Length: 269
Picture 1 (cartoon, rainbow, N blue to C red):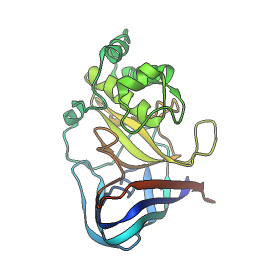
Picture 2 (picture 1 turned 90 degrees about the horizontal axis):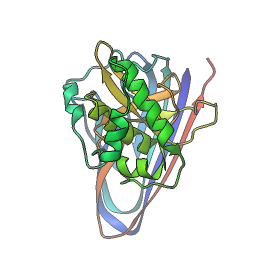
Picture 3 (picture 1 turned 90 degrees about the vertical axis):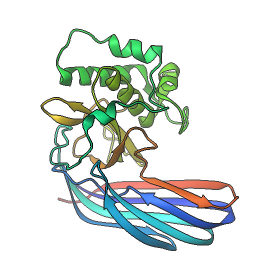
């Protein structure tokens, strides 16, 4: 599938900031399932710093904006070819030991309810089958409903609420997988459409679980599927904060507002 992606993030400040330093993980991953044709990142008034590929295989760029400024706009425009790899992350080069992803964070730390759900799945010794069943369990227990959770909502809170968005499904699934001894991580990216064909106009998230003999395999519990040609992978981490496409520090005392728009379009073959 040929996709064009336009992504704009605007930060607005009620008082001008003195300086802004950002780390951007906004370049698509390099693996057999996707190939970039062109990809442009622009930060208004920004000075591009050095870029590097980290141990997880993600490309990260540093940017600095010198103030005073009352708004900063980050624009991404690019074209990419994708193909269905049945969720398998084949050909992705990284150096971090998968066992690193057995570590919990503040938002994936399990409570008794998550433990009960994880160990309530029995009757299988196959890791791939177990991973599919864990993903299905999250899909069954957390309904997709925007606006009911926040950035800092934990996996335990989302499970108790029974509702959430892709971030909550992914945190819950990584928590369950780690409880069962399967390394799991949070993946950020884009989605062209949902499984029923409805347009998807926001950044997306899903989990990757390490399966013996196959490596990393993606599971999107929010859409009850594995990533296919509709997905564009950007990067990964232990949780949503660790895998955030944009991280930074603004130097100033004013309040910040954020507007995000994403458009993922299929191009003619």
